[in-house]
Image 1 (spheres, helix red, strand yellow):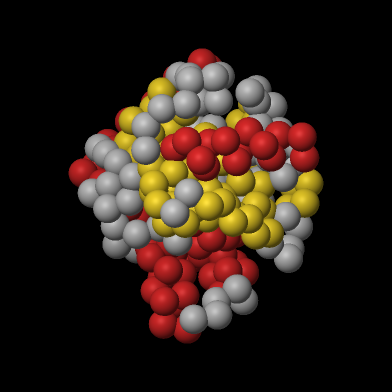
Image 2 (image 1 turned 90 degrees about the vertical axis):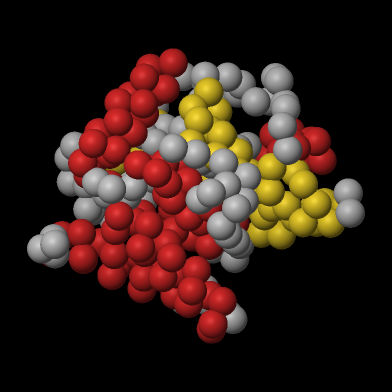
Length: 224
């Protein structure tokens, strides 16, 4: 397959950014390579029709964005995703992040909860475009999109939970409640502030331990 120079440039930008956070060379490098492979195969052009390979966030309407590829990769690294994980994504958006997760955790299942009906419709269209054009259908068949507010009706058990939009400080307790109710033991939640660090909550024998990234980000607000 002929290489796309613009996509190759995006992948190099992503690699340069996330590699700086690698502490365990073997495990970290494996995670970086897995994420880059997913971004190569689950092509961003099927989720945004303008400037798909620019390493920046882009509007998809309804006050939401398709996140910057480097930031997406950072979230996926923090989540420590592995094959077989069951994952809850909060906020489907364009669908790109969910498809990347599905690719990385296959044969684990991915449930994505989105409360904006128009975005659910858009994301389902994007998913079908992806499946028709590249051979990742099998790895994306473990992805289910639900039009629901997971905070109003928390259910299921997951190894990882990833929020794709940012919370305000007064919403941290809601994320902690999800961690207590929905995370399996040794599970991880990654959730950003609207402006500030990423929050990483890890569950160990019903104890929730919270960490924060040193670096700061900007996200659209999570709609509850």
